[in-house]
Length: 81
Figure 1 (cartoon, helix red, strand yellow):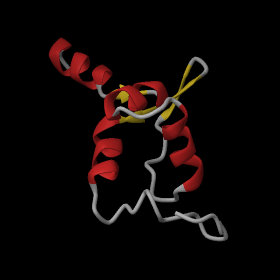
Figure 2: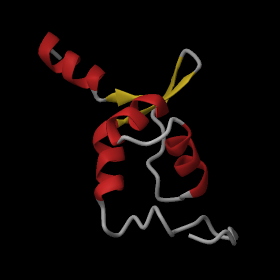
Figure 3: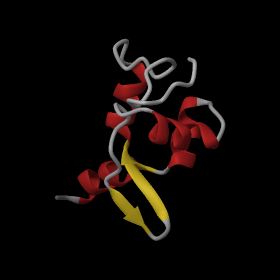
């Protein structure tokens, strides 16, 4: 991997705070999505104390018309949309 590829890859690693900033939502919203929606992308791991995600996966999930992130819930979750 050359420096340009590494820089691109590093820019695509995002925390919930980064996700919030990129999508224009509160800092708590991405964390809530990760807890409430089974379809939310799985984290790649931890960097220090921060959970990191792959931005292209999060962006695709958010833009997907089938994600239903405003209404879909984990099984057994009876909260309304």
